[in-house]
Image 1 (cartoon, rainbow, N blue to C red):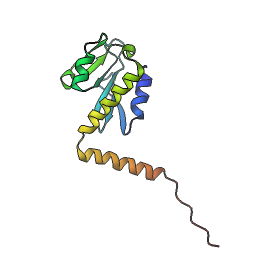
Image 2: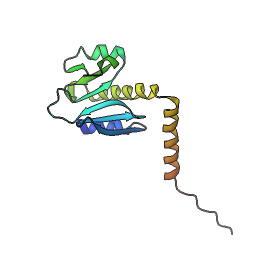
Image 3: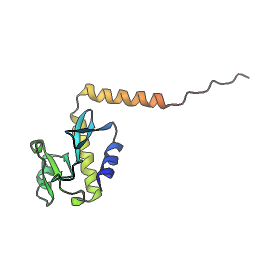
Image 4: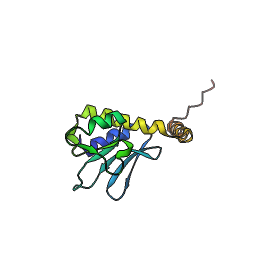
Length: 135
């Protein structure tokens, strides 16, 4: 995978938004809470970071090319030095888990707001029904 394929995958998950923050980081968010950060800086010592479970965190940081993420390791975030450190299938699974971990911690109000936005979007995109002809 590369930055663009990770970006597209993350954006394919429901209600995900993106935004640049701290000048050179592309954040993937659900309910305005980040679950994945892609580095836009070529000189960075890592290409991306994401949230994981405490058990997976302990397992992943033992692998070469994966380290505790700067500033957020205490929240069980890992950082990858290169995109090819993990197979694509495993990385997608980990990103889905990161998304779900953050989504599941959102407040009920925020989750309900996401559902409302989705319903409004579907309604706005729906075709109006044609009136039936009277014959």
